[in-house]
Picture (cartoon, rainbow, N blue to C red):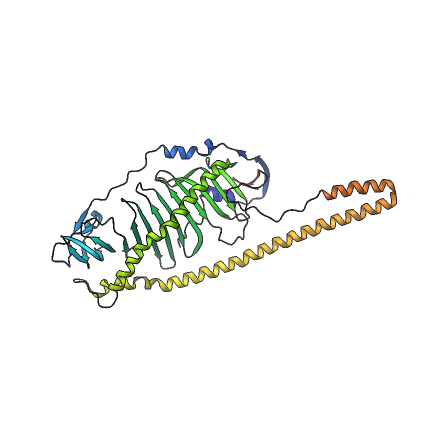
Length: 434
């Protein structure tokens, strides 16, 4: 089953999940400058961004229309074997017009697009919903400016013999091709946020909704990526399940633990905030495409709608297509819910054990204090004034002992700990942890 973005890069996983038999003290983390932290970004920004392919208007004549009715298509579709197109809307001035469905079928594909055409042949301005029945994919698009600017949502269904999964992606793209998006699944608590400026991408993975069983589990990560190669570089931020945060410099095969300057930490935070702000604002824009789909399906799925040249099962496939996945969806969601509940119970048990051990440690400290006080008092009685002086000195020493705090700082980007690391050797592999 393809789960969505539940891990960070392999190097980060190695760093935070290793366990070993021997340990040695490592160096303290060094604090790097803003210039060093941003070196990888500057390298990517210096590269020329990829060119945006401008769509070439191409048209085909629907086989179910006798009058001239140019219907937008693509070269990829025209090149397919036995390609034919149908349009169940109107025609005006020789072009497809009004609300309707563009049905494109060949020997190897079956796409359907719900759209409102203006009668000018320019379909890039119109909201649209595209169904790909071969690849189990549905895409909603509402243009927000010149191509490719749009608010969009993509739903990809994976339906194999032994597994079922859904990947949802919601994004905003501007006229320069920069994208802000979030990727998630109904069967996984992890969520990806991507701020993609075409030649540089900032990737954030929030797995904080996953119940924490292992304190070394990564609950949050931030990375900088080269979109062309999908490789990470520069620096990264990782937060563990116990709330501890580490800053990393990705150099070679082994990441180096460092401390980032606060200015760069704020820089990463702004990149994440930009994604969240844009997606919140984009929801209302995407609703235009959803509303158009609802209105069309109300018309096309009333039991009376027909399309010349198409049998009824093909003409109405869009009406009940999703229902075939309901049994697999319900089964997968039930298992996911059960597994998540079991994980929550395990996490609660681990937390209870931690609190119980913490209470034992507190009680042991208190008992040691009481025993020390009793010993000092007995010694004072036996030795008179000298004993009184010793008791005062001992009491002052005991009062300086502080119990460990139960509060944890969960600030996402702030490094925590004693600024040092322990390295663990297992054969040919070295892992580093607190």
